[in-house]
Amino acid sequence: LAMLTSLYMAIKIHSSNIYKNGRPTIFITEVVNWSNNEFTARDICNMESSMLSTLDYYMNPPVAQHYLDIITPLIDDDDDLITPLVKQHIITISNWLCEISATDSFFTSIQPSSVAYAA
Image (tube, rainbow, N blue to C red; front, side, top):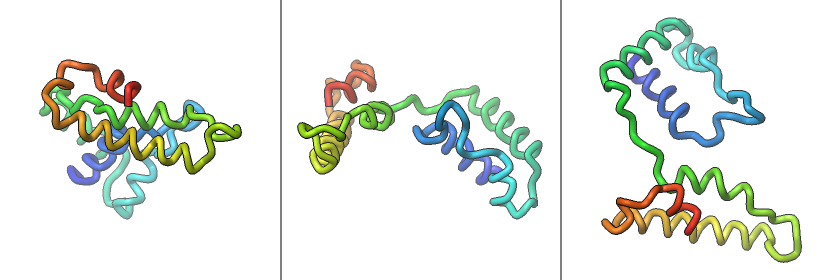
């Protein structure tokens, strides 16, 4: 139950694709199905509450790559200037720059959203 709930929480917290058109794309009923109905939705919600309470709601903050996942779909690859190949190249380099920034102490005081925007 703890593993299943942890996976569900990780998806909710770290996936930028969990919401489409303002609606969730993963529902707790799917998580119940992953357990072959061994656990109920209430079991999972109770475990989630227990885990969050135990952690005192201390969760990892978003990193630059999370913001990059939000920003990159905004790149318009429908015109002649930026082709899909160029867009993919931009995304690859931006991801690399975000990863590199995590190794430099200079960037610890800079908001991850700013690092992603600069990348």
